Amino acid sequence: MRTAFLHGLMAGAAAIGAMAPTLAATLPTMPANTAAQQDDWWKRAVIYELYPRSFADSDNDGIGDIKGVSAHLDYLADLGVDAVWMTPMFPSPQADFGYDVADYNDVAPQFGTIADMDALIAGGKDRGIKLILDFVINHSSDKHPWFLQSRSAKANPYRDFYIWRDGKPNGAPPNNWTSLFGGSAWTKDAATGQYYYHFFYPEQPDLNWRNMRVEKAMFDAAEWWLKRGVYGYRLDAVGTMFERADLKDNPPAPGKDAFGVPEQNRVNNTEQPEMHTELQRLRGQVIDRYPGRILIGETYVGTAPELTKFYGARNDEVQLPMFLSLIGIRPLTAAALRPKIEAVENNPVGGWPCFALNNHDQRRVSSRYDLPAGTTGDDMARITATLLLTLRGTPILYYGEELGMVNNDPKRVEDVQDIIGKKGWPKEKGRDGERTPMQWDASVNAGFNAGAKPWLPVSADYATRNVAAERADPKSVLNFYRTLIAERRGNPALAGEMTMVDRANPNVLSYVRSGGGRKVLTVLNFGGAASDLTLAQLGGGKFGRVIVQNRATMSSTGIHLAPLGVLVVEIG
Ligand code: GLC
Ligand code: MG
Image (cartoon, rainbow, N blue to C red; front, side, top):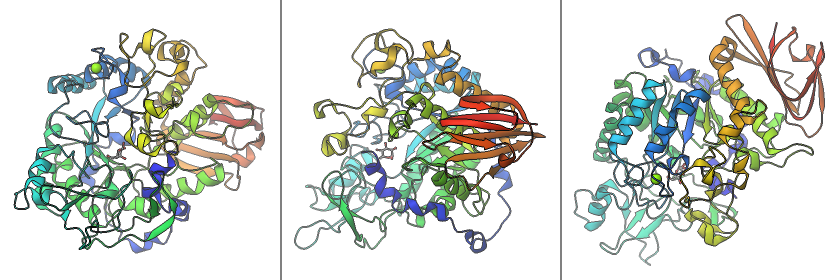
């Protein structure tokens, strides 16, 4: 189950609704960093996460590649995205499908070459699409030259690039910390007899960010791609960047994880305050030296106050810390969503919200929730799309989400590619299901390639659920997304303020966006039953043009919404 992946980093997520308004009083109010905010294209942007292994395979070897991405830039432009965040395409043993980087400044041969990257950056520029890369800051691959050096001898100059400690006198690991991916977070290395620390797989040793030479090497690596025209980074697993220096044991927590290991509260090896200082240095010393560049954070943190710390007290840290806690809500209700959204809306430093509902680590929305009777995954795709694209803030979409792609989960452990799925089967089936090939058309392998066996199987629904078929169908999920994205671009109300209305309603989430003298009302029925609302209860006014609608009907004074019903309408 995917929530297992989140548990470690999202402990206490339930507390997020209780965002303390008092935090505003405890943080100094300082003027915003105006120099850094001049170029704020990212506030109006729609960002598209793309997993290069699975997007398009131009050389027909079963694995997607950079040229495949370039070949589909026109599609991304037509969809209306402003930036692409591409997950790792760096040289890597692929123990964690690229999240084990062996060289931050090169491209894995299976994905292409640096020249292919330059062509992708240029092709994006021609179409107004900026490229953002993934920066895996917590760890490198165990095959990175730094680690090969580091493990070779205690006296090696790279020894302190990673975290090495003696075991306990009885030979046990230095402390009780466990890896999010199963077992102890320490692995004993034969060359020196010491243990090294890894929050994730043993193939992903944690970098030692207390070493200023690590900072220098990593800042240089980040700058290298900015010079080539990349627009910034999505920071991988930021919460794990620092550990308590005294290696204090973590307190136990109830139950066992999917790998059979007793749970613990990872208070001493996640969310350490030093990470904020370090991220502010990255922002100031690297990112802000290149106009318009941004940091996006993979910020799976427990509470809204913790999340909003990532903006920095002067908005001088991460521009877009992703608010990922909406993903964990079960069941998905208006009552659960509203306080979480409001907590981010009211963050004390005025940081710009950033929301994502799908990514390469999470079940796709169409397959994630129990569906109300009479509804389908496509209805769930439409209601979540509407939420994401009409909230105030920057949305991050995940490839295939715009088609309503479903999870295509492995049925047998032999078919699993993702190691956590092999280790945790059947409790944890891994993340293969949400990483299957993009569905382009009804031809062989959904047009992902020319017929070679793809690294993960194409979903069975591809003959009808694909870009070509959905583009031609006005009622498709794809055209629903296109309509909403186009509206965001053209309607100043969707760039303006947001006011929650009908706030006590436990089933229907409603809010008004206003700007440029225009107003847009969004009404979303997350309840299991039909619901009738009057326009007066939703803030009044008169219905204008309908922007999108699904399972909703209107009279002159009110709205009737079936379960998962959606209405986005201009208010006159
Ligand atoms: C992030 C990535 C995930 C990866 C992990 C370790 O959470 O999104 O895919 O496994 O970091 O790098
Ligand atoms: Mg290929």
